[in-house]
Image (cartoon, rainbow, N blue to C red; front, side, top):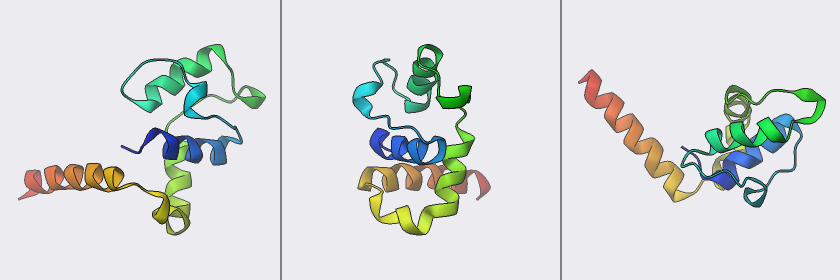
Length: 90
């Protein structure tokens, strides 16, 4: 749900990598799937495995410092998701 550059910043901070969008050559609409494929051929340091939960936890622990880095598109995607969830509850 995040812009690829922002998601990579979460990943880089959590996994101590230095990836940019130009490093990820796999074509897929979801950045998490592109990263999964990328790390099959380019293992992470210390042979860590890519999982989407650690960047999400990094975001939740640091949201106060990261909030100003979110794009309008990020906010719009989250708003749509929460609107859809609220519609299910109502």
